[in-house]
Amino acid sequence: MRKKELVSCWRRKKRKVITTDSNHDQPVAPNKLDRDFTALAANKKWVGDITGVWTDEGWLYLAALVDLYSRKVVGWAMSELRDERLVEDAL
Image 1 (cartoon, one colour):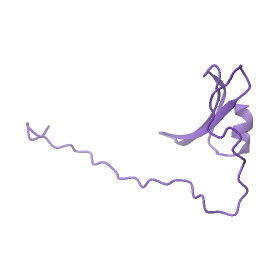
Image 2: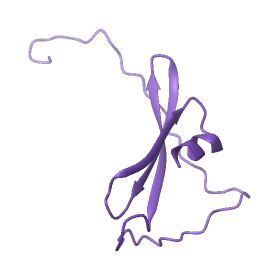
Image 3: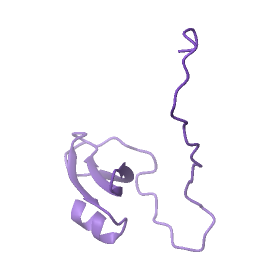
Image 4: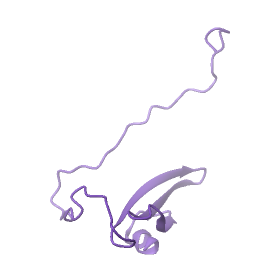
């Protein structure tokens, strides 16, 4: 585009990255895996994550559970709310 002297009519919005604040008084779950992500059998170690997905209608949250032995998704759920119900539905 620069060589042809073209200019985009869209401007990128700069988004501020927000991360989790670790300085709080809330209880913290114990680290049971201690970064050992090997599994000797199926369904012995599951890991999970929640991520936000922007859609035309707003944010949706995806909770996914993965079996560390097979590396397959064993449960997932989507919701407009990031709450306990989302995780329960993924289980």
